[in-house]
Length: 398
Image (cartoon, rainbow, N blue to C red; front, side, top):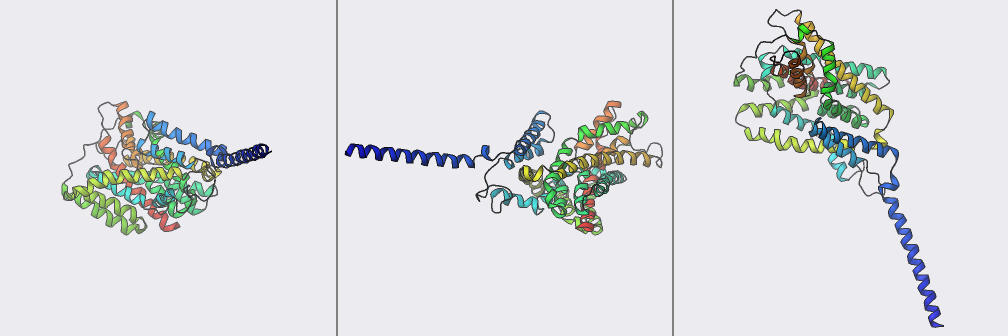
């Protein structure tokens, strides 16, 4: 009798334990990524893997695409929203804290500090008229802005989208964080994607818009720039641009400050820190958090597709505007002072990739015609130009 009772109790306990175990396994499985995954998550995971593949296999901007690609993987691991503070959009989560640098716009000025500390403006100082080429390439920004308005975006959103044409990821993040925070992920990924694809996008249009004779134009060697000129340039540049467009001060101020640290000769440690450890750390944090912000539910929308289309179009407009402006400008220049139109593409601020493209395309037609130093003039002017354009848009639309 006693044995029978014990057996029944043991069987009941075993059944309760198995039920308890099954329920807890079911709860555990409901928290896994497999249970919460949607087709959108898998699409974004493939996008992240594509970015990493392009960076490693073809070396397309690996310093940018690997952090962004891995960030996309992090941001699109599906999980059950149980208040665990895991996602980038959950207040108090680690990713959300790191994302504040993007959301509040203080990563981009720090990136500009590093860019200023590593940029040599000698090519621009020696031939100031090349600044006009950099300015002409900014037509891509305003062209995309007008088209975005026609496509139904409001003025603030159109301004944030248009800045993609400057080929400047930090500027795109800075402006979109102010004008269109809800579109920032798509705008940032689009800007950095097309920066990486500059070697593919630009050359066909450069060849299309130039003649054989124009591609063979040889430019005078740039003059030697004195150290005094290099020191004065960031000071004068800041005063002129910031007084003209005060709203661009966060970017312009840090850019010229970094350059003064480089050129002064007495702040070498500051310059080395800005162009080394500082910009590397900020690039990693910015890339990972921008990538993580592209959660499938936020990113896979019709607006994102429109933004990517407008981004490609703005790059094409910027490239064509730069090349065509040089052709027009040459009508007023004497023989021997003409500019090779192949450097017109370098007015976008993808430094130094756009200048390298000018060099590579030029060498295809004349293996002894080196355009790199000439192309660096409009290239660094494009960095200033995109920051000024962002300031103008922020001043009018902010």
